[in-house]
Length: 302
Length: 35
Image (tube, rainbow over all chains, first blue to last red; front, side, top):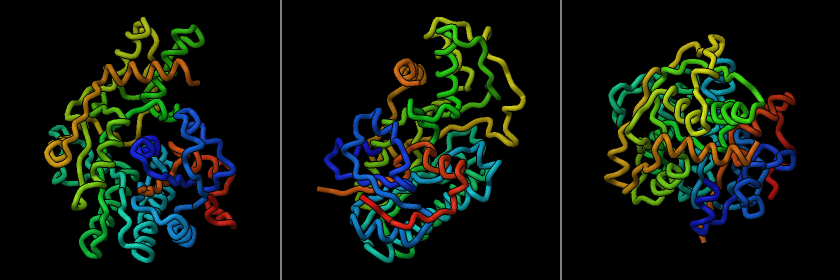
């Protein structure tokens, strides 16, 4: 997101809990470390958020700070809910206290829907299956409330999976790519994975930040589903990655029951029709291209 | 020139996990925002 905003000529302020303690490897890998104004800010602290807004008066806020792992949310539900719902609440409250003209972007999630064998739209009812999904649903309600009751320009993107090489190695697509590359180099023989039958709507993150920015330039704030509209089983991603690297996935992938989630969404697919109609946005990168891009980046990055 | 704030700039829970590992999740850094 920061890279995209810089390319659009924005002055970008990036916040983290204590910026002096972080190495910001992702910003360095993107070549934008020196271009982002880094600020220390705990997003669960009202005073710090208000002071941060007062010090830079942003026209737009993209609030990505929160616990972002669905799996981890089962382990730490309280932290997850506090970071997602509490953080959103503090930001919205701070905007109301400081500058009502600041626009606010909230990253909601397809995890709010639960299973969606039929493509989910902005009108689909919410049926979360994880503390992460529950928290995202609650945060989106706060955004709607502030938009309707206080007139804030605040919007949520209901994003389906959007992959990138900047996923941490614990996220499944990055784990698959990293493991397959290691196998291709002879550094390991097997890759342990959970349920390969889960079906997801796989998108490419750089395209999704474009849609998020378009949402923030609209005349009126609205919520949008961001998805490709196509879905594939995780096994398909595994197959493509191993195939590109000249490997037979069946010889190396081991199903590990300890990696199965307590409750998982089996099928997830979004209908991006509104985004196409009102934002002129459409996801173009397909599953194979996503795998290729991640392999290319994975052979450079550790 | 427009100004944007991107929270969570470390990306992918980097700051959160570092704070959790050091038991600093509840810590409020005294110096506040620091550009």
